[in-house]
Length: 124
Image (cartoon, rainbow, N blue to C red):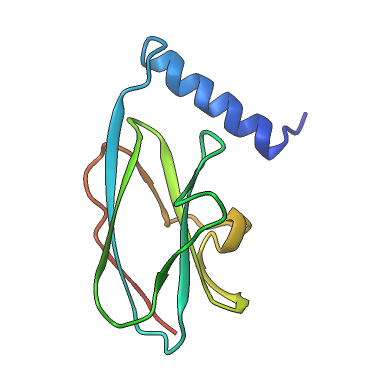
């Protein structure tokens, strides 16, 4: 039987909580990004274990220069988080899981509490 994305995330969150004895431990995951794309790049982070997005509330992080940008996410220890980035106004150009966590990406997800993510450069 296939489970919906929301059902899988709820189940994943429940498994994380169960693995922690019912109490989720707060932790963090630090990401560092730069972009060499000539346009503004929008960026979000998506939990794969619960229905949560950073920064959330319809907002996005954005990169509009060639500098390094650091994002410190508060998350639950053991939670799997993926990044999605896309060119503003042209969501068909994307990195990671893309806008709305809509694409498959085997190497753009990291585990909360497992250390900092190395620098990621979003190239054209």
